[in-house]
Structure formats: structure tokens, C-alpha cells
Image (tube, rainbow, N blue to C red; front, side, top):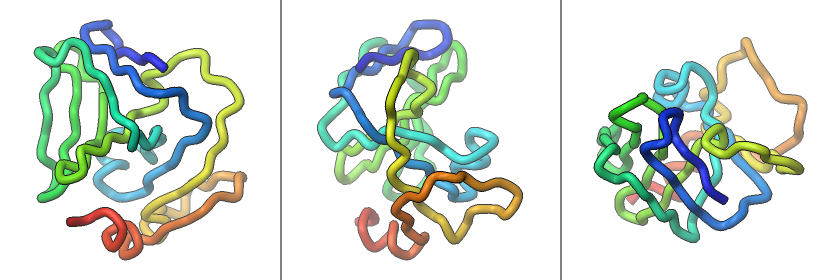
Amino acid sequence: MQGTCLCGSVTLTTKDKQSFEVCHCGMCRRWGGGPFMGFHCEDGVQIEGGEFIQSFKSSDWAERGFCKQCGTHLYYKLIHANLYTLPIGLFQDLENLTFNEQIFIDKKPTFYSFSERTAEMTEQEVFEKYAP
């Protein structure tokens, strides 16, 4: 799978994905104006156009990357594990994806909901699984 930012300066490539997750934490909602929908990429990401990427260390264990040219959100990255989550919007012509998990479910506001049934993790469960 290959995705790009709005201006095309950055290209991200990863193995084909069949499912995606949603994060409801306050930081993701502030970052993108709503829940973050992303592909969890434990199998690596190739990045072209790295000179156009600015990263922001949003916590002790994670950073968020965006294109310096157009501002497109490019990734959320767990620093200690070199694990990326890529926004699904970077990739066009997606078909037949499965919505498989919601994290920070206890932080989801009441003013939106999804009809799909998914696995769910609370803030504490996420920290226990991913924080160093």
C-alpha cells in the first residue's frame, strides 16, 4: 500500500492492510478534529520525502509526524518500539476494510458513535500494552 500527503512531497509505503483502528483519546481528537482512524503498522513503514517531515514529540513515548509543506498528518509513532500508525486517509481507493478496534474507548465523547462492533481498549489497557 502506498499513501501520500496532499502535496505529494511525502510517500509512505507499508504492507497491504485489511483492518483499521480508531483512537478516541483527547490528543488524537485535538490533532485531527475527531477520532483518529489508522492502520497499525507493526511490520514497518518505508518513507520517501523525509526531508519534508516535521515530527512533534507528543508524549514521553510517542511522536506525531506531519508534512512541512501541506500540513498533512502522516503518522503516530511509538518511539521505543518503532511502531507506526498511519492515517487511513493517506491511502486512496480503499475497499473491503474491517473496522477492528477502538482504543481509549473510555475517553470517547458521547456526541458520536460507530455502528460496528469492535474490540475495545480503555486508556489503562492501552498504557499497559504499549507504554514503556
